Length: 149
Image (cartoon, one colour):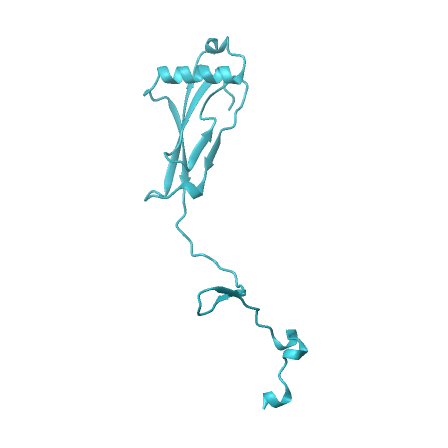
């Protein structure tokens, strides 16, 4: 839906270093669209809530276009939007809530592998050769007729 009045927005994301939104404060001018990137960096999250859901909240308010008469660049429009949000702090406007859900842990799936290193009694890792089948063995390593008996 394209707005007919400018709409200012303020994105509140879960607290912590793992979450973010860009831009988190801004304005959508009439006949324009904007993309808000909600980011999640899993390596920075140490706890997941019991219900497995975090919430991004996008607060929005339609305002008169005369507030943006002197704002020509996107930075100036963002500055005006910040000023309006600071004046209306604590008031609830239209709000869109976006849940971020986490699935329960799944068991790890490991691929089969060949051990290339093994530890000897001294505790120092040593490179070991993978075990070869008879077809892969060099002739010098094959058992002689006497050794087989």
